[in-house]
Image 1: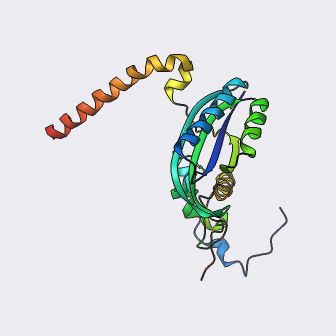
Image 2: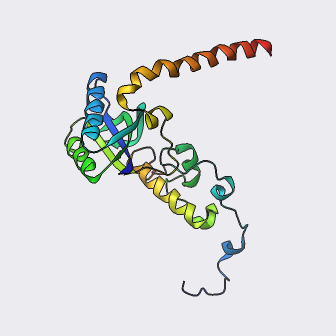
Image 3: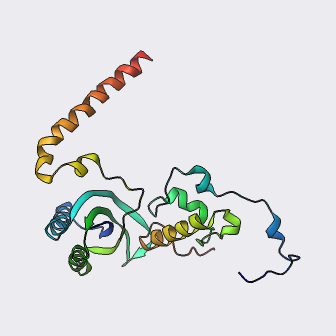
Length: 84
Length: 136
């Protein structure tokens, strides 16, 4: 990873260190069919929430991302929601 | 042999007959082409999040099976040009998938003989539950 500058502007870096929801829970697998779980990880416009905000660990964020993209393909989730 | 999951979106106007014909021919193809069907599942008619081919609703069907690349090729050929199929994806079976106990153990021929035996315990549990509720 390229070295970061000291965070003067990056206020979000030292906010709450969230724990990965899926690491602690461990029961429910991440599935593209599980809209009720997936919906918590997209914005109102349908974009995938970044890991630094959702607090997921790298592995689960990847699985989540894959699941959301599959769900989008199979029309259980939108690609984008126009905010009007 | 590898586990796969096939997700199908079918046109909303498809009759039940045609759907069952399609699913049956699919499972037939799988079985004749080096594969074994584990399970079929459906969500019925659901509304799409965005229109597909101008349709807002469609039938969701899932087929779980074991197969080889040859199996996959055959399925692809079958589905790709079928006008009733709006969309489909085949993907690897998730590790969390557990096949239903009946399908894992028995051959298809034995299923017919076994299903009455499977239904009886269910009937028993249903009778026990109202009794338990009355006791409470």
